[in-house]
Length: 620
Image (cartoon, rainbow, N blue to C red; front, side, top):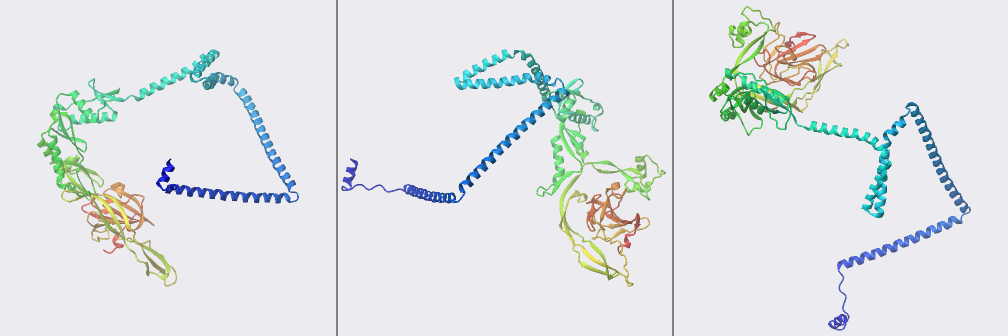
């Protein structure tokens, strides 16, 4: 009906098939490619088969070909059989040897440890039977489960276990011997774990009453020290000066107190005359207690604020002493008025220091040097004006200094030249005394980063070298010195040369003399000091760690051949003992440490322990 209807619509002609889609075209093309590939593979296999058959026929047509094939087959079969027999023989020999060794081992064990086998059987026999029984139960029940289902297997396992229990009932007492130690071990481990896991603390007791718990003895000692400071510090009244000795015992608690909380708890337990206040600690020592904690914080911040620069990360402002402000409970009688605390911080204090006597000192001269009267100096040291003093003696002197000072720390960087050194060689090709420059020298460059500490008036109080990086290595100057004499013989040139340790400054406040064994090179604080010659640093440090008492920050360099140089009164050093240095290397900075009346570098040259006048090596 459909075809007739289509024919009617097309004028009696059959309807045209629908057009092929792109997908149908791709499938048809893929089918054609597969047919072509199968046909090509068939042709290749046919040609290969024909060639093999032809080659086989050709070989078979050769004389003795069949006999050769039979011989090769027999050879391969015989070789394989021979290898199999050899393997069997080796296996049998190994088993025989193992059996012999086992029998010998058993004989040795029976002789050395008679009855050991019986003991082992008695000890581990029940374990072996138990393990074998568990395995058999599993295998038996697994077979039943496969045939009759899961629950049938469980029932079979229970029945099998019951039969085994009845059969080996005599082994149960021996199994108890194994189980009891295991159970005891499990109980012991449980008890130990429970005991170790408990939070052990120290319960602090005052007058027989527990006031709290601390984590360890260190916290307890710190809290006790804090309490004693609060009670006995200089600002407390006489009525409050009591002695508190809390004790502790071991306890278990998860609630622990820190140092400050424990100190508050102890004070609460021993006195009713306590109040909450703010304590000021300077260098860890309780200095004052007041009730106006917020005002005290504002006052301390106001001292630092004028010198702070938030936009400069290289500047930091701090006090010359460690300042700590803490809230807590303190004896009421120890409180000070806020105005008195401010007056205390803005005042001065006496700081004790020691003066070492040098040659030429007298009691009156020492008193003058330290802004004291002769009577005050004698009173401090318990001496009289007639007391004899000698170089090296130490006297106590004092000077007033501010209770609290603001210090400005600034990180600075600068570059400086590294003087080149001169390498000198000798040659008999040139006349004695003549010098030829083979290579010109060139100074290097180093970048130094330091941390300078300044007072509010701009005076530098100290300097710490953070890093010293060489950005350009110096190029050594190379010279050749002639050694040929007119007579034709060869002379020996001296032991080298020294360079001026502070090249930028040549003025000296004092030269070498019978009473002064070096030169004092005048230069501002922080001026670089360089090694006068190459060598090894033998001493470096302050006073006795360096060149000795009175030299301050100082160092000594050994140049070999008996020569050495000394540099003292440095602001800071950049080398340490045992370090090798080259001529012109930075070793420190000019300062005024030790027995010094101004910034300078004291420089000495020694040879075999004998002092040499530096002016003989340099022009004044």
